Image (cartoon, rainbow, N blue to C red; front, side, top):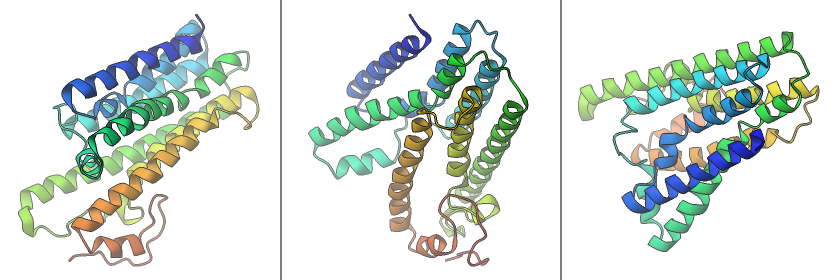
Length: 269
């Protein structure tokens, strides 16, 4: 069995598990609970098939492990492993007939999202296929940038966590009603930006190993970005329906990529 076959077999088992679990529990957030885990497993499979002797693959595996540990911690402290379903799925389920949502569950939540989780890790396949390329300065730079983006996402998530704790303690009169300070002053979703950026950087490891940016494994980062765009539009439509003043925040603040706001005043309504 090749390394890629091992990854695909593992992914097939994951798909079967999350689909059956969603049917039994009527909870459609099983992919979310494994999101920070299975990419770590996939990259370590490639590193293991290289006998843990390839410096580039080892670094890639360690970095993705750090990514997964951070994301798992953040997901856990928000109650993600307590059986709470993603708040978006009940809203979407209410807009569909039961059979329509179950088709959506199988093909989008289970199959499509798990396909992305495989694809974003496949720069490790490129690195595995070019193990003869030694780990060099470019790899070190890529690793440093990955860590920089990891720190950025950690800061963004901590700012969001602190805000929601303060909001919960402050009650219904707490203002502003959504986070718009810190990194969130420059981007409506800085955590999304840093999350995607890490996987675009991860792609560069494979490109460095192959000696060219023209690698099909860029598909993973590209599809992940597309997924985030769709998710962001849906999430913001929900937020805007709850907080009409969110429209002003949308007008003044960059959606994803951090940038100087058009207006420095915060929306306090």
